[in-house]
Length: 387
Ligand SMILES: Cc1ncc(COP(=O)(O)O)c(C=O)c1O
Image (cartoon, rainbow, N blue to C red; front, side):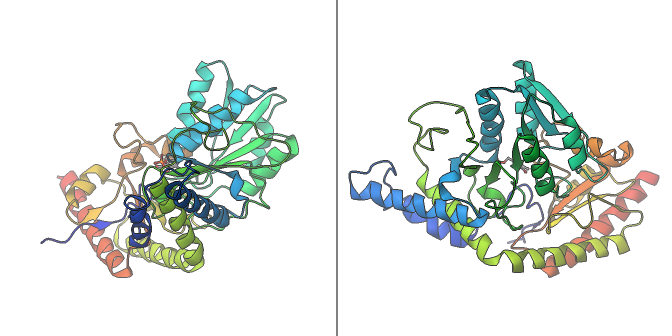
């Protein structure tokens, strides 16, 4: 059997941890009950598993477990945050988002605009980051919600959401953050952070696909969220649908593992990432590193290699390396990355960009091999383009 390509696309998705899979399996077989069936043993067992998972999610985020609303993933959590808050807002039709947000924020924002809401899309700096002063300047009397992502899924820069959240709080405006890329590796304590709503997804943190959550702060002032669809109101009346118990159990276990290993794991990821950076800097002439180099996700590296088309490079290395040129959700669309454009990256470098996402199952040995693979392929492709 030939070896599988080295997987360095952990920003797109992560392998479900075998510990998570083992925890999920019984909830597909013997514990198959409906968590809402409180009249018998099957339902009670399922309900208890959901409660345990909810506690694990809340524990990771440092919040009240009643603040967790399970969704089908971060796409739904982001849609619920934006549509839900804006449609329920009594005295404001203005929404602020940043230009580097994931499409799961930008597309709902543009839909709201078509429905008659006012949208401000904030510029980002050369690292893809939003400055709190830009947020402050954009807030109006009728602003109902600000949504700024925690870490950017393409370039890995981390926004200072506490400062942005503080700005919003002072202005009496709700603040949502899409923390899909960071909850597994960065410490959160929502009981102390000025964050009102937060989205996350299990498959970015070694859990299964198809499950995520929206954190909706409890207490005053009360946050009203109109559901996206109706049908039983299972999750605090904000989200309906029979709870996918095995998925929720998987998310809970993924959160438990991340919490238990977060500090050690983040340090290891950053060491591997730095090794990759040093190795590429030394072996690929003129390589450019994008995004903020210190305020960034531990496992993320984004580069541009002048004179090398990243699609050609990925094709060349297809049997050895799984990497991407940007967001998995937009690689199907042949458009240049809106994030890199918003950052003002030199247009000729955009088709030469690559995203490396290092994860729990990568090793230093793999990284040494990747450095060689990329540098050899880059040299080869440059020679071809000179001819
Ligand atoms: C920052 C960010 N937000 C939202 C999503 C969507 O998450 P999901 O796949 O859980 O719907 C992704 C996934 O690519 C992401 O990276």
